[in-house]
Image (cartoon, rainbow, N blue to C red; front, side):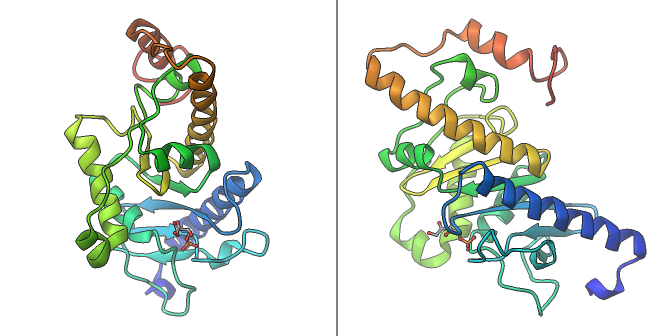
Length: 243
Ligand SMILES: O=C(CO)[C@@H](O)[C@@H](O)COP(=O)(O)O
C-alpha cells in the first residue's frame, strides 16, 4: 500500500517519520528515557497514518526509516517494517478519543513514575506547573486483572480517557496523565510539543515531590494564580506562546 502513494503523500509520510524519529531522540537527550523505555508517535488523520517508534530499538542506533507506519486502527501498513512499540494500542485509543491531539509521548521518566507508583495526582503547587497544566495532573485508576489479560495496552488508553471524562477535563488544557503503577503519557497538537509537555511533567513532578518534603502542608496555587499563568500562555487571549 505504501508503495502506491502519490509523490506528495510519500513526502508527507517521510516528513512524519523524520519528526517522530527526532521526537524520540529528543526524549533520550532530555534524559526522560533510559534504555528503550519510551516512545513517541504522530497521527495524520487526513491520510490515515500513525507513525510510531519501533519496539525495543535503542535510541543510539535508531534511524528515521525504521519508524513504523500503521493505519488509524494500528494495523501495520508495511509488513517488512519492525514491530511497532508495544504501547501502540494506547496511542491509537487516545488518538480516537482525543481528536485534537496529533502527537503522543510515553516515558518512564523518574519523577513522574514516582508519582504514578504512589497512585497520586500531581497537585499544582506553582506557576511552573500552571504555565502548562491547568490543574492537577491526574493519576488513573488501576486496571483490573481481566483488563490486563484481555487488552492491556488498549485498556491503558481506556482508563486514561475514562479519567478525563469522569472529571470533565479538557485534554489540551491538561496535556498529560499518570497511569497508576506505570508512568506518564503526554500529548499535544504536535509531537514536538508533546515532548515538551513530557519534559515539563517530569520537572513539575520533581518540584512537587520536594515541595511536599519541605512543607507537607503546602496549599495548592490559588485559582486566580492558576488562571493568570495558564491563560496568558493558552487560548484566545494568550499574551505569548502557543496553544
Ligand atoms: O512500559 C513499557 C514496558 O513495561 C513500555 O512502555 C516500554 O518498555 C517501551 O516499550 P517499546 O519499546 O516502545 O515497545
